Length: 163
Image 1 (cartoon, rainbow, N blue to C red):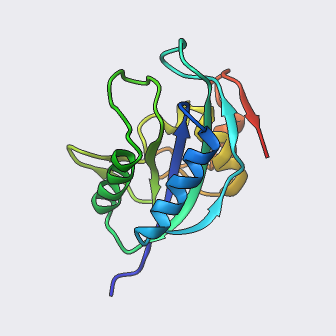
Image 2: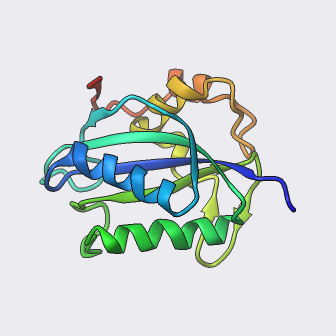
Image 3: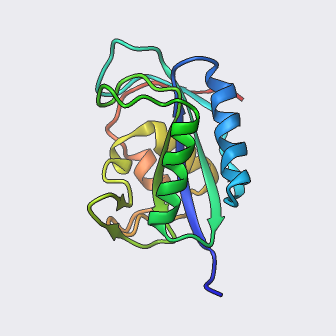
C-alpha cells in the first residue's frame, strides 16, 4: 500500500455562517477519509480580487490521505457541491472554497490542478495560517519556508486571528 501523502488545504467562506461552513467542510473531509492532522486558527480576511463582498473566514489544514492529488481534488469539489457552492464570479463570494495548497513537497501540474497553488506565495490569507501550523515547510518551487514567505509577503490585505 502506498504511503499516505501529506496535503495542506486552504478553506474559505464568506457566505452564511462562515465558521459553521468551515466546521462542516472539515467534518465532510474527515467523513471522506481525509485525516486532519492539524488545523490553523480561523482568520477573518479581507477579500482579494473582488472587493465588493463580505470578508472571509479562512483556515488551513494539514491532512493525510491515501488519495493522489487528483482524487483529493475530486473529494474537495464534491464537498463544495454538497455545500451548495456556486461558481459564478472569479474570486467572488462563496459558501465554501477548498484549495489544495501543497502536496507532500511535490509539484503537480495537470489541466485540472496545479500544486503548489500558483498564488499561494502572494496571499496572506493562506500564508499566515500556514506560518502558524507549518512554519518550516518549504515551498517546493520557491525553496523558501512558509515562515519566510509570510514574513516577506508584499500582500497588505488584513488578516485577523479569531481564535
